[in-house]
Length: 240
Ligand SMILES: NC(=O)c1ccc[n+]([C@@H]2O[C@H](COP(=O)([O-])OP(=O)(O)OC[C@H]3O[C@@H](n4cnc5c(N)ncnc54)[C@H](OP(=O)(O)O)[C@@H]3O)[C@@H](O)[C@H]2O)c1
Image 1 (tube, helix red, strand yellow):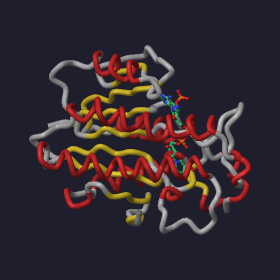
Image 2 (tube, protein in one colour; image 1 turned 90 degrees about the horizontal axis):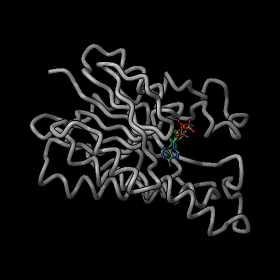
Image 3 (cartoon, protein in one colour; image 1 turned 180 degrees about the horizontal axis):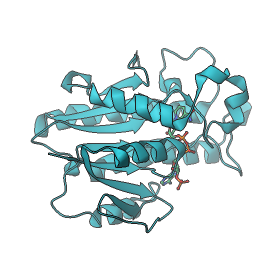
Image 4 (cartoon, rainbow, N blue to C red; image 1 turned 120 degrees about the horizontal axis):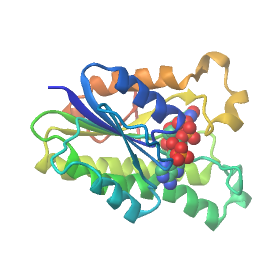
């Protein structure tokens, strides 16, 4: 049976590449693309739905646009924020911390994906293997934190990893075929990484397409025992 998949944040660099690969994949029947930017170019294979993950009502409305009986083989959450063009930039030191930054980053990187989980989990397939993947980040690992800084972004991803673990524990009982996973995409050329790409060796700065291919490979190789864990683009497990 062909697969039904959803990508939340389908307009971002990685989300767009994941969507493009899945659209070209003959084993996939339909790709539901969720983004703040509504694209009306729908087809038999591609359906676009608007979502703002900061807004619980918007998430609820977005699932209201899905067919009642739909079940997903894969739900991929590709949203996230590290900086914006206005008032948000990762903190270098304690003096850079502000309530506004913490609230905005945690809202997009932790609260939003958690609410997406709340509303989308009932749409996971139960009779066969299904995967709910969230883009996380290596800097969310406490044991890997050697450099400090980036207070709000690090904390937002650490908290997201905890939420993923919680989802895996709770849903194991009602849907033992569901796998919840956090993914580290590598350093990927995108709006999000742009201010920091000069610090990265060319060979370590991935194209979104390369990262997306590797992440889908990791997803294909997951089994039930991997649920609740965090994996990098090359399949390495990242310790909490
Ligand atoms: N790039 C890297 O090097 C890197 C490294 C480690 C982890 N990651 C993680 O990978 C994920 C994707 O990053 P990226 O590099 O692809 O960044 P990106 O190109 O900036 O994409 C970010 C995406 O998040 C979406 N988004 C932000 N706020 C949203 C909201 N309120 N509602 C709905 N969508 C929202 C954006 O939607 P719009 O298009 O509507 O703005 C965009 O699709 C993030 O979680 C990031 O933390 C990236």
